[in-house]
Image 1: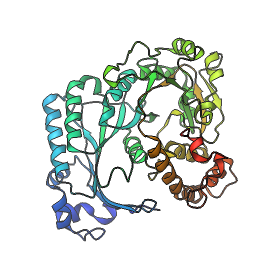
Image 2: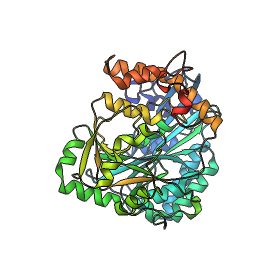
Image 3: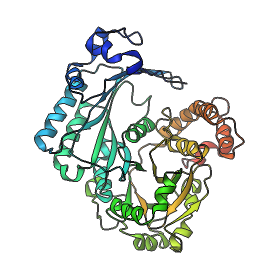
Image 4: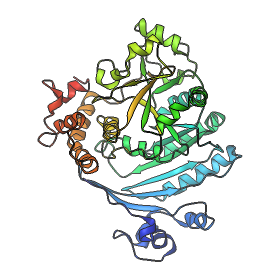
Length: 446
């Protein structure tokens, strides 16, 4: 399994595809590409030093026998006074670029919409990824966080852009600190090639402009309110946390489950039944109203040690041990952070693989005493059949991931790496770690 990449500096891709100079890249001629995508606005922008050259690459996923051409465009947000007229103009440009994209291609636009935000290196940036169906949940997450956010937005149709534009215009003041990176997928049958979770996570993480980040999924909300302000105050008061983050320690925000399903149209940052502080969630946890997130699979979050967290008798943070299956929501330093494994798509293994690599790279974990996240329950995103199919396919893809770990870290005698090797039997059809009931029982779908 692999992915071929084109480097614009090694191959002169900008000259080849925009300026008409230099050799064609990867058997694609200048006329072929220009017929599929309009680079004239890019040529003008690059001449003004506002953009890096576009990158074009032939991407292939041997695991799914899937090949597509990927075009990446780089915007540089310099405007500080952004209003509705600017938003409409930016969205018009995006629609024009997307209209130029032919079938079988993916268009990635970093900093696609500029909202006039500025950040400080010491800030913490939430990273998330989602589609337009989750915009209401995204808004609640942004409002409760009240700090920088780097968001990868998955676009399937041009009508998604209209919904996105309406959302921006309606909520502009709440979104000033958000950087949006668009992933327009015109490459595939959406049922045969599921949602590219980890590709989008990398897109959001790669474009964090601060020294620190907080990994989130879109259905989870931080607490207490204005969480970024509180954590910033903590970092100023306790320099050891910053030192630890810069020395490969991840700080966990333990995750709880708000079990009631609330229609997205009724969600708000201060919804009446949401926990607003640790006192609230402690009582809700003890009353089993807001239990541990995904409690049926204790491997996923049990390492956070909920009993110790609820006791409130620790320092500002306390250390925990990593074990296979742990998938917490973490704050850490961006510098040298491993990337997510692109080829896990849809359900299963996507975050698990990243935490496995962090473990092999020497990261440690501590839990923040006064902060947490909770999952706002929702109608399932996948039905049982989809889960089974995607999980089986991702299990097949795990071989490439394991090979990459061995290449990077050596074939070390590590219990977690051993567990991964045990997941792969006979091209993913037998899963050693999952015992008598197999992989589906482990992920809670039988």
